[in-house]
Length: 245
Image: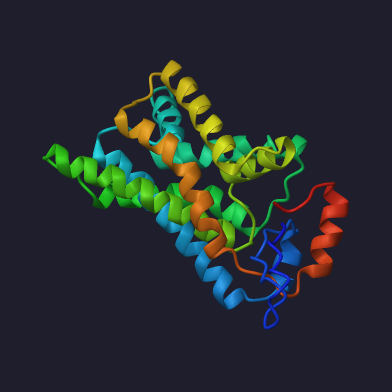
């Protein structure tokens, strides 16, 4: 990550402050990097909010998030809930991490389980609104909350979730921006979900177009710098053959 140099005439501040960057650390190194009192709560809050955001979009009734279009297609053929489909697909997506050489962590496993449980729990408590305008409000709120939740748990630096690890891994390998990769992934899963009979609507298009820019917008603000991770970060890059975005 580069910073813009200060003007030659400036005498009081000659160094720009760099923004925190994402690291590629293993589970043990993630814990040893420090700041767990902030990182662990941020991780779990982000994951719970992610599940809540999915449920909000479901109850909105004006289109599911792209991955949930796929999940809703799966539940037509399997005796499982939507949240359980989220968990199943999380572990399937983890298989794609192997060629991308993404580094799993504590948050990766927590994401694979907690998001689905949170979604099912919220669906059990929240009914669908009668008015269409309220449904639209739930959908918009769900999209905004999902972007924030994604930035929260990725920024905690305890391991990316399966789907977002796929996003960041492809972004690193292709050199494309997070928004471009995320949008391409969402469009792909929508097509597959439709082939399985999944539900789609205007909210699906809103999510697919907005979630990438929202994640990229909020991620710098919630990425926690790891003061003890300097040497581990360099070693991780050498081991994995990649660089932090």
